[in-house]
Length: 256
Image (cartoon, rainbow, N blue to C red; front, side, top):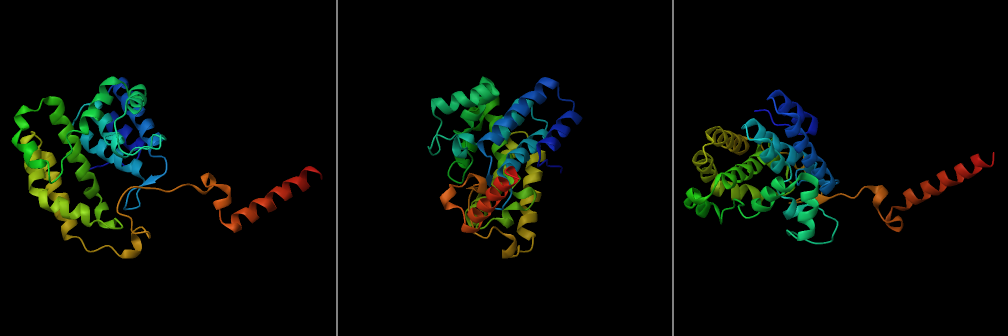
């Protein structure tokens, strides 16, 4: 199974399957929004979070999902953990919806908005399975997006590299067979096979050395602020001294 981790790999994947320029541009716009909302965020396995969004989109492309679903996959959880710069927590506010709509268009924004109502968790999966016949084609496609989100954390054994992954591993183990059953019920037998093989591979793999996991043992997404963006008085003394030396050198050079 080929899963892209960069925008270029994703674009090439879509071009190889024959997507039109309009479809490629829709995906490109979603990618640019993804980058703007997660510019310095990293998963609990240390991987740039943007790669996760690309991976989800790539799995959807591999499953022959249309471009609008691939685009929604790129930004599937922006209302849950995207950084809109408004200081708020998770939420689908009118202002955020307007920003997403402006970036990717009304159709894809509505998909992402609806995605938040269909999250697959140990608490919701039985109800989703029981009511599956009542969900329309759009909802069913969004459930495929969420299954791809579950899968992406396993395809590269990323779950083994989390600082702390018990919350994810235990939850997935509880509903693993149900995830596969849901994929099959959605008419996605290949996705069910992908889930089965990836979960089995992760369970059979050797433990990852603790030294290869994030040193802060984080469990979730984390913002790592670049040094150039840190408040000046919060930067280490050695950095402040270095800046002063550079400034003096420039002044001396100017005055020859």
